[in-house]
Image 1 (cartoon, rainbow, N blue to C red):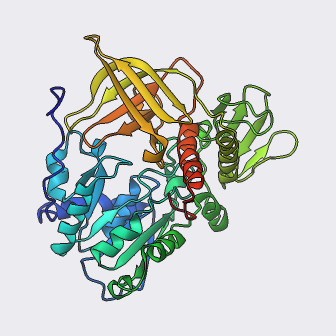
Image 2 (spheres, one colour):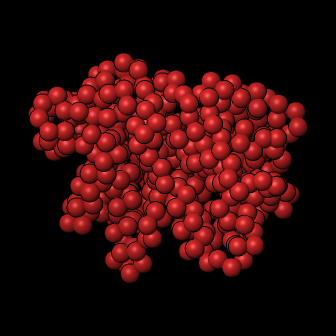
Length: 424
């Protein structure tokens, strides 16, 4: 207990999913899998029995429904972010879930995973630690290989395709009814192999499996999205115009993405491709536009000029599972040194949080979080999470996420320890 706030108890050991909750979980998962006609392919898993480590990519909540059916008739112990426990801590604990604050190094999580393995369970991890912003992989933590070797059990991946197209993170207000979707559950490392592989070699195998592109998959499979509002929210990730290079001036209407700065418009067809209304289409493939934005941020970082300036923000705290606690208003700056937040509460007490570049290889962001305050960045300590909402200024939390990654990569290069591809 600090500041009078009740903190989430991270030290309780997870239990195996209670027998009476398994039918409920499967009853929730199965209709969705059937509705989307999800094809689950299994490779090398014949005869596989727990314990094993299951690593899944993360594009939408539907991922968890597919994983529940992929491991049927067994049920895994899912690592879940703290906000997933709000108002349902008892239920999630009885389902066997393990709480984690995003992008923190917490030895307590390792202890929980070891406990699950020793009890013959299936620890289920979404190592990207956030929904994919544009249906492509996020960096994986470098520690993943070490964790897998320490657990010493088979490593299995579950890579889903189509979930981002069905329910993109940049517009979670509506699903698109995409069907069929696909998933591949694959044994990539046996327990015997783990004894001979280095952590880097384990990481290389995992990264090789975490290679996906939902928009390429959609085009290849000729999956139509007929939703007339299919481009709404796309400006959340495509925040910079490739024609005039103005930032924060993008907007969307129906199936059209536009720039207020130069008036240019792009039409998003039923297969997820963009085409300019006039002239050359700079980036027909949405992830290519996103990666161009990353390159622009990388140049700002390399030239030492990346900064949001001081942004007015409102901050809420999530110390435990009972809900958010308003802290107050203040300022946030994200620059070459990392994040710095200062907020004053109703009693006039100033609180601060700093996240230096070496401490944060990526960050978690939300778009229109809970549809109440708008876009936000959440920053975590081991016992608290701050949800930070910028307002009254031009900004993009997507750019902050890209900058966090590029600042970390730049830092690692400068100290002579560049990140391996796909890792951070």
